[in-house]
Length: 117
Image 1 (cartoon, one colour):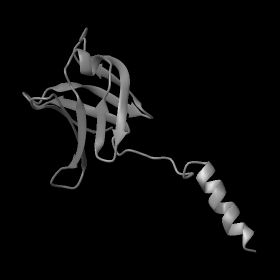
Image 2 (cartoon, rainbow, N blue to C red):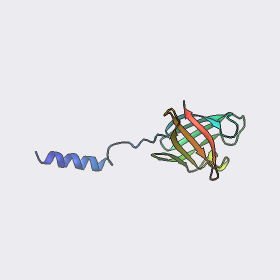
Image 3 (tube, rainbow, N blue to C red):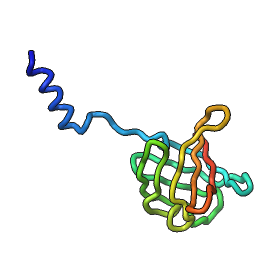
């Protein structure tokens, strides 16, 4: 009987906890520009990578890259949003009605506000 809890503990340790870490930033987001409220594009974050499709034809911000997921958002590690738009981090918050809001920031200021799609 005593070996069953020990075996379960060893199995749990071998699988790295056995539970996937999920960031609230994962998913599909519709983004608007903070400067004028215009549609900016669609952002998808999933399993350590992202894709961004700008609403502006030919935008160099469109493309893919990698992110470091966190419990409160994500950090952009490479790709077009970082190198061409200067966006370094996405932070999750809630609006006054309790809905999810993902805000994309450059080092200087927030530039895009995104909502789940």
